[in-house]
Length: 377
Image 1: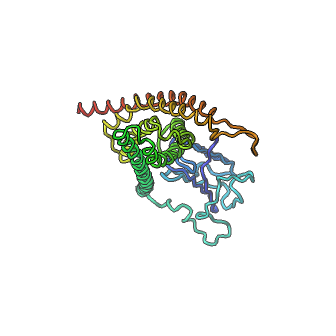
Image 2: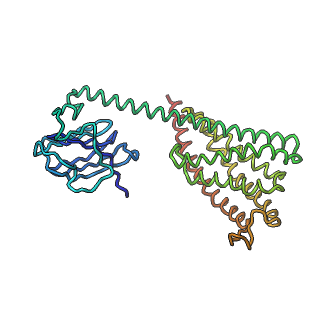
Image 3: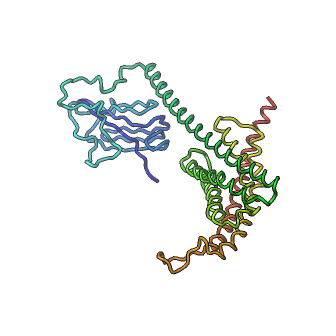
């Protein structure tokens, strides 16, 4: 396991060494100050996020452990390590000459033996403050950090809200147009319906790739593997199988597939959009974790049927296949990929259904328990 080190800034005056550990909101610190050694271990917000950080320094000379002290504030940790030999200027902090990437000079506090000012009041600008003043500044620092976190959260939620709104609009257009064409004209105008909706559903599916970024970066709390299977499975089917095969475009089964995909998203994206505003509606939550029960198996079945309909075309035409001889000296038979895609739909579909079933049990248990408490109150 990688050991994380916080950024440590050091400076000196003629009688002491000062250290500033750049770690905020520290909890469970373990600090040991010895005559020629300093060790620290604690959990806090550092350069690499909220983790456990530690370091150990073998000091260049002895320090007075009785006079030396430290202070933990909300923003960092300050050490005052008093030299045993007053006036002895250290040419480095550590005994060994090894350069530590996380140890840096605190130029704001630095003094040396040629400094003619002789003033040490600037070493620790907080030393003359009362405990009440220190508490006030610590609270002020925490308030600033809280406002910063709130600003980030607001920007994130605004972005996610408009993303979900855009996706909902694209799938709503696809669903309504396909449904209207099929209800009015039946199977006769499926080609025109496909031509009109492939743009909206294609753009929506391309933008859905962002959901992989959202899950990977932690922008949203989502299962990365489940998101990967759903997004990539759909996009490969749409852009690698359906779109290149023109004989598939007027097929009613493609229309059914678009309707099933869109029906799922007509509930999912509004649920997430309202969540960005901290709004939750019991009916919408129930639908989010219920409509998938008939639609997911129906969608997987429809995807398999569409691939089976596409197989004769790709076998006869050789489209998307690569035969020898060629410059790459590599052969690829696309129907074999289609068989693999069917297999991945079956395996991935079972995995997704299990994941959604577990999520449904957890989410609805919380929903119904909170609803029961409200009725009792």
